Length: 310
Image (cartoon, rainbow, N blue to C red; front, side, top):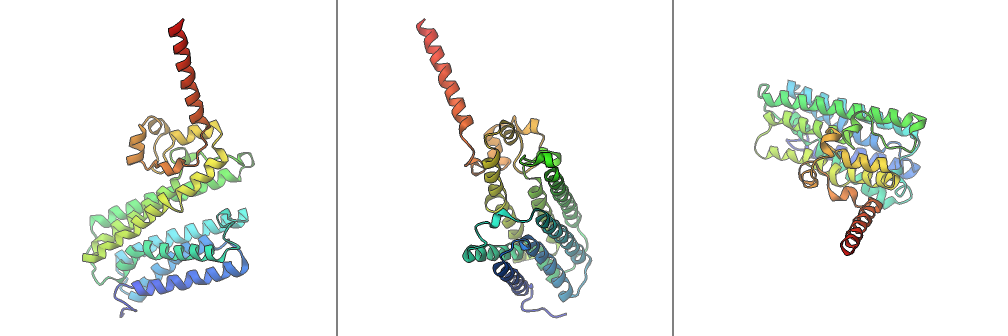
C-alpha cells in the first residue's frame, strides 16, 4: 500500500498523536477530571503501532512482533493505571493543574511529544520496505523487552497490593522488587523500550538510526523530569524524618535492582557515576541526620581537646 503523508509515517503519527491527546485534553479541561490522563498516553502507543502496521500492510514478521510487543505493553499499563486511579479516586500530580488551563495544556503537549518520540523505533520499522531476515539483534531485543515488561508489571502489582493493605497506609513500599530498587517499575519500562530499539535495528539504515532518540528521551524523562525526581521529592517529604526510610534510601538503588547489602556499601562517587544516584534525588532530603553527624563530630573534638588539656 502507498505511504501516507510521508515515507516514514512521521507526519501521520504526529497528526494522530496530537489529535488523540487534544481530545483527552478537552475532556479533562471541561470535566476537570484526571482519571484518563495516563490511559490516554498508554493507549496512544497502541493506536500508533496498529495504525502504522495496518497502513503499510506488509505484515513482515518483525513488524508484527514489534507491534504486538508495544500493544501488549500499552494495554497492560493503560488498563492498570486506569483501574488504579478509579480505585484511588484522584491523581495528586494534577492538583495544581485542574484549575490552571495553561499548565494542563503544557502537560498534554508534553505527553504528545513523549508518545510520538518513544514510538519512533516501531513507527519506522512498520514503515520500512526493507525486510532482512531475523538477526541476533531481534532475539536479543525481544528478550530485553520480556525482562523489562515482567519487571514493570510485577513491580506495579507488588506496590498496588502493598498499598491496598490497611496496615501499610502511610508507609513506603520496600517489598518484592522494591527491596532492590526504589523505582523498579521505571527500570522495567526503560529496559523494555531499549529492547524495542535493539530489535528494530536490523531494519534501520542511515539516518533512520536517529530513532535511538526514542529510548534516550524516555530514559532522560524518567531520570530527570517527570519520573524519579517527583517521586523522590514526595517520599522525602513524607518519610524523610523516619529512620527506617533513611536506611532504605541509603541502601537501595534508585533504579537498577541490586541487593541492599551490595548497594549500601558502595562509595558515593560510584553510585553517582554508574547507578544514577544523582544529587537532585536528595535535594529536599531533611538535614536532621547531617546536622546530627556534625554535632557528633563537634562533640568528639571537644572531648579530645578536654583530654589533651587534662
